[in-house]
Length: 79
Image (cartoon, rainbow, N blue to C red; front, side, top):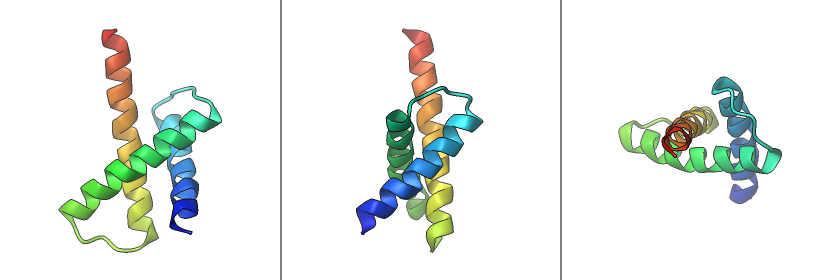
């Protein structure tokens, strides 16, 4: 069940992050960005504060996905 929740939250976070950052990606890339963002953001938020609940995890997932997209765009510009 936790993996299913990670995919669902990751898909939502990836969708929101790609729209905010104006990145045109496919469904699989959007979900992958969201899941990676969920992992990054979740770790960062849990390390910095004691946020509990699904809302904190979702906020962390969106922030992580935004950070990942920003890094990806910077790397893409330099290549």
